[in-house]
Image (cartoon, rainbow, N blue to C red; front, side, top):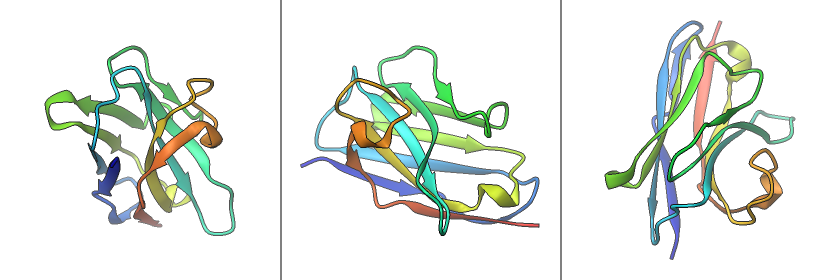
Length: 124
């Protein structure tokens, strides 16, 4: 059974940093895209960052480019999202997911496995 468990969320002041972790278990995802999405209250879920587990260039939403970095630790089967220069508009529940369709890393509908998410709150 595949499980994705996020951690690392919390409350931080604007300009601060957080590192989110997503621990995967149940199988390996060598050729799959691991993605991070977020959903703020009253808004649709949006793509944040993604990367193929086995390597290659990552993808980022324009709103986080230059501030967020996705990385992975293969031995730990864990994906990270380093978030720097956080802004109040980054406040959301952040979830990691595995792309099981291989069509587009930006589209949530193509991700078949999801974690429950972790809350990130950025105060001004």
